[in-house]
Amino acid sequence: MKNEWKGLLDEAFYAPEPERKRAFLKGLRPREIGMAEMLLTQVRYIGLSVWIVAGLILVLAILGSAMHADRTEEWIPVIIPFLAGVSVLETRKSGRCRMTELEMVTRFSLRSVLFARMTILGILCLLLLCVSAPIVAAAFGGRTVITAMHILIPYLVTTSISLAVERSAWGRKLEYASLAVAALISVLMIWMQSYDPAMVQRYADIIENWGLLIVLFLTAVTVWEQVRTIHFAEVPA
Image (tube, rainbow, N blue to C red; front, side):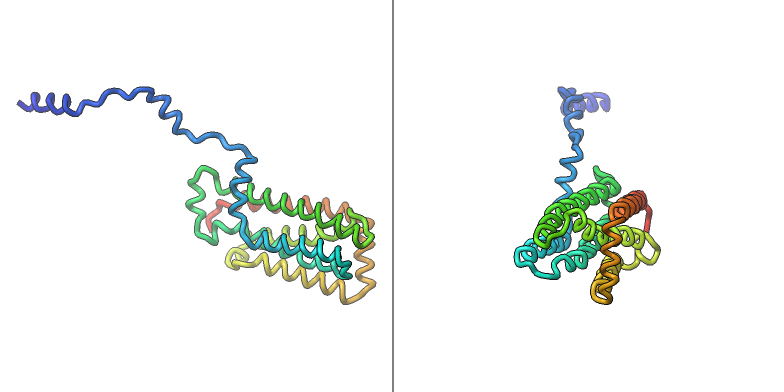
């Protein structure tokens, strides 16, 4: 009797073999996403503070040059460390929002997401430099390359120091350590510009003669710090 009931149940609930099973399962696989598409996907997650500071620098460069404001060349290197500071904050967004564990099991690893965000921020800085440096140089009779180096050096110094600080034991406990570094570099730039005119001239001479080597060295240091930060990203806090 039991065998009869079992047979009837099997017949009643019989499910035919699914057609095109392998094709269906293959269709469930996520499609490949290229680097360009991934970067575009991550742009929307860049914090508003980054765009605000970048926009402020661009507006200062354009309006200051158009109005021939005397201190435009001085104020851009003073403000740009804060762009570096808020950019470094983006490397800690997952930790600050308590999303680290979730992002570790998503389609893109935390390291790849961090690499994409750093790439976007680097492109943003490069575009900002390519727009602001020629405008300021043309308005104030300087050379574009020298003006670009005056802008870029404080940015690279702030970025490299901030990344190193953010990875340190006490830096990981301070939520806005990179902004403190940016403020320190900014104050140092203001002090150097206002304390002694001779110091300003010496700094200008150093940039004139050794600026390219300094930028290359700082770029190498910054890239090294970025690589270390990416490898450090999935280390438990």
